[in-house]
Image 1 (cartoon, rainbow, N blue to C red):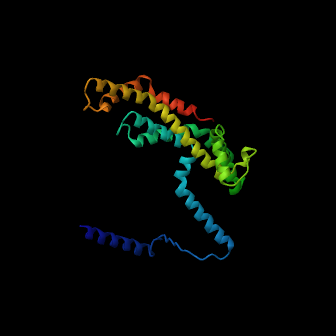
Image 2: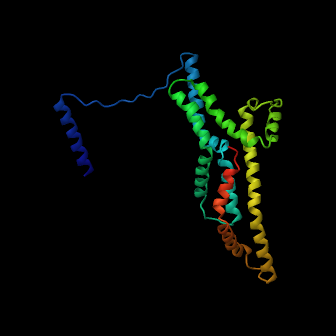
Image 3: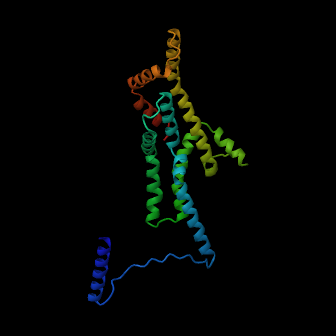
Length: 251
């Protein structure tokens, strides 16, 4: 049946072509690689290679330079503190972290769009000025989080062999980004410890009661998990947690 359909299709195609006295136009795509003729061609090729590299690293860059890192770690701490294995799924927690990060970073993204993207599209600025204007709001956001603990900046400035900065502009981006990542990891773990404490107390109380009753073979987790969930729901844990996470960022 397929062969008959193919033969009929080819026959109709050539019939239409003969009727029109010419074959229909068929697009031709030519992908070729030519050698560089001058230094400008080499520079253009290097810029294209750099752009492709940045596109492949874009997810990691967004994770490490936005509020996503702290939120994702804290949400994972909550899941582990509640002794939940499958609920909620990790994809759901990452989705929550993503949308909360968009909410927190929206003023920063809006500044980038207004001050850098729109003038660049309107051809009012070149690519170098676009980069400078685009990274400025993001640098300001990261510095707002790091300025409360400047030891992280001092650590990377010393490792880079740079002197003590006098102003925020004196801190290069390759120093500010790792300092911001280190600050976010430290802050997230501090929040995680505070989240763990009440649930550890519940585990200790349940384990002590079971031991006093001689029920040594019964895992305390089976008894403590429902009480943890009840406590978390009664205090409206999700709203309290996400609200405090948003408030923990200086905007």
